[in-house]
Image (cartoon, rainbow, N blue to C red):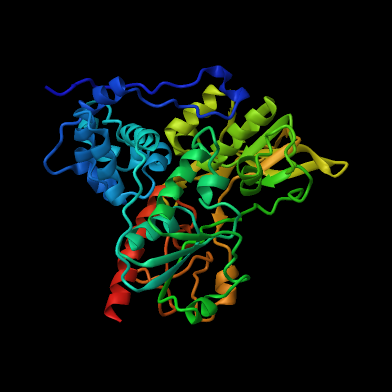
Length: 459
């Protein structure tokens, strides 16, 4: 008989002392917990959970192997379709994807698919030592621009098909947003590097400190013999509101703040990369990036950290789990509020002026439009402001590549086969969609790999 509990097996977590360290907050299931949770899966014949997985993981099959204590086979099932299972188990919004379609969610909570994926992947990373079997080379060579989730997924799928794959990464470390954007306490960087090491074992070459559009152009890559290219350069260009005072010292984009904290380890006592340790930090935005920035700021200073968001709690776009963790860690939420001016003194931030908002009629996104309440201005104390209101793709590639079409948001335009307006150049992930989730980028990488394979074989 399956475990018919209406609730997920709880995830062990660090206690309230976690704001004084950067170690992972969620500690993972034990074997007993994993089997208990796996036993909640009904192994539905039509597997509705798979409908919500952008990379097509065989969810009931890997869970069944956990139930049987066959963790090695569970991991191999995951790896058939997912390049980064230990990552996805931690940062994917399962509640709006696979778990949303779980039959158990009709009455009670869904099966904890993400937690089980993490458990199987972590077990494999700790216990499995065999090297990946190198696929037979097919004589074709492809290039991938960007070593984030989309690029790494595309690289894995093409390597499995026998292609010689070169990945070009602008930063000094591969991983993209996984290393510069998502904090250590949500996604340990050792996990990311372990997953990337597996790709290298498959023969994937990763070239860091290489900015395509500067170091080399797309035209030059084709001249070097690449038969197709995949642009997976992400959306790393931060957006600002255009407020008076945004150029003051102590005002960061979330991208810069998180890159300094995560990639450059500015939280370390003798870090070579400086970061301003404000005692009154205001984070503008309501997405996962805003939660990450606020929680990093809390660990950096243990001071007052406030999230300012123009809609209500019900409209917060961040994952419910991340919001709950932020609240547990003492982050303040100032909702139905929007900044209008940043006041300074001696070149730095002193205060942030805000207005109260109310929700009107629904806009094109289906959410009620926030409207300013007249004469509702008020002041929040702030010596540091972090703008987490979204990002756009870097325009460098479009500017240096003739015939590469972008839309009004600066995103690359692709057809149904993931090809851009330039012959042989494919694209996917945030460079096409704008800032989205890790798993959607991975899904785009898988689709592009299949399209590139079809293109090269059909030439």
